[in-house]
Image (cartoon, rainbow, N blue to C red; front, side):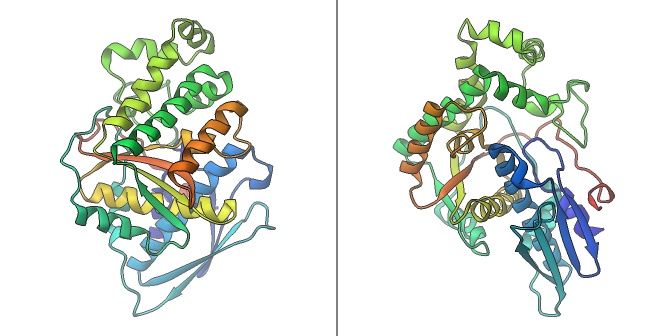
Length: 336
């Protein structure tokens, strides 16, 4: 069950497990919805999540003296990934394995310094060494940060202006819970860093009719700034994670990179938050995203990371630990 628990601790866009592990001795398969039948953005999110699962399993396996290898199967529908575990007395442990359970998101709007030293930045970037095709780009220079923040803001405003994207945004929030409660599935409201005075309005905004009325007053622009643009602009560090090759390879590599960078950052005492909407909305066929916005985002991100396809933005800095964290499912619940 140690491997299953490591997989269960992997991140997903909405803290929802959409895959299951099926073990047979030292072999395993990851079962998912048929990725080929999913809408484009959902498919990409699932691929990123699967990359996180693969890397969690690889890191934990190394701790247990196992070498894990995985293979992608384009033609297997609901079992796209197979895993092989090999016992080896010379398997070096992966230092990240000990920190997997502690990885968490911190949505505090403002992160503080100090910034990482050049050596620390290099050490963090070196976490990508085991991942073929993965890329990490620092958006810390003033011009790069300004461009990235503009792209992040444009996507975030659209999430509050667009009915379908708005529904997707709020559907993961567990409004049946109180502000001090947590849950294994979905996002507890208390984990979202919503201030006391903001909470009544936040709960109302889950209703599209209310959000649409607020938007007549330009509230969607304010929300785009508050929820993503200002946090991204003011963070000590902003990184973009991507991948190269066919979409499934690039997204899996980006997911593996996310797991390693996020876990290592937390282990270094850093707070971290994923801001994935903007690079995902930039990809061809992004679900419910207007073509004009998609083209603008695609051009913008390509100018910032021309050598790879960006999938994830991660802001890093220092902040007090969140009072409420999203829970994790049990190991038994992720085994088919």
